[in-house]
View (cartoon, rainbow, N blue to C red):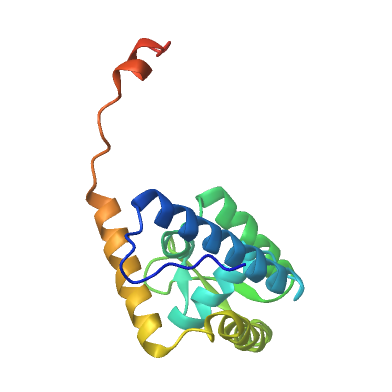
Length: 166
């Protein structure tokens, strides 16, 4: 049975967090399954996707955009390079700088995979009307911005008494 609320019922922050976390987990499982069915890991997909939409980038720039650590980025690029999906290229003006770019094969591959990814997302999100999407989008943006500047509450007295790190 679906969890329903009426318009006058307030939704507590912990309840909203729980629903958000569960929805996120379900979406991640669904999307990871769809991507791995295409023969890619999620981090490799994210690298290809950012290169498709942003063009050639340095490894550190890719890592900043997809929030992956440097060591993980190097491993992902190595895997993709072995599959001839990306190549490393030196910068003409500064040989210390190396860019990662899609190969022709990689571009064709990610274009097809990304089109399927969009359809997979629409299969889930398609249940929402445009206005519902807009409200969720704006609400999630507000939550994200508020979380960036939020200061956690002070440690409660009971936790302080049991803290062994002091």
